[in-house]
Length: 355
Image (tube, rainbow, N blue to C red; front, top):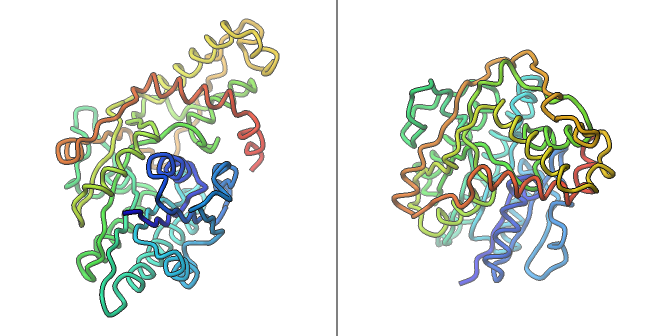
């Protein structure tokens, strides 16, 4: 039976990748793509989908309860996948208000609308509310600590992670208090196509191509677990299909890397591309490799940010055991696919550099 999905944050990085993934694998399902189109929301991320049968774009803020409720009713939505969030830690430190408004108040607005539509009538409607969260709600790990698991105590250390932790708790509360059929997933750092250029990997890629410095916080020893965005979409698909209502699932890539090692890998990969493709030097003459140099010369160590968590790592054992999840991409293969995409889509990322 075909589903009718409302996907929030659908013009953002992970949301857009999920919409493309879902459209390809579930072509009979209807998709309502909701996005407020703030600085990181880009309608161009949904190119090729708008105007197609079974696809509707809604330029709406998740805090607009009447409009969200209207969309749920109009499109007979039975599945809500909630990606919409302010997500950049540095921005949350400089201006936390937007994170409280979107991540907490916005999530509550969605939950209220979902409850009213699905549970407010004479008979409850079949439904699922899936909430997409982050591993940052768990805090920071020491070098020898095992990866975060679903029963881990929440210890958020930034306004961003605190706001996401609050949203996780609201989703849980709506299940236990009102019976809303919810699932939650907490993922590790995503990377891949459509990634806004303020984040580490796309920032480094675009800076190398323009010959600009590569800022690395502290000494670059901070560790993250990296997940190719399409593998994340596969995990959510499994949770929607077979996940237990009320449960949380950690989705990770089994790829822990130090930040400096990632930057160096990107430098070496792009330098190699320039050696094998002479046309790149003409397209990107400011890149060090265009004149025989090394992108590693662009690395600059900068003052560490406030409250910088040292290490994140996901224990994805639960979703692996219970739902058969396993990432398809290694970090190396995912990085190659990501570089390919950015080199082929200069017209996508160039306009975003001035936002």
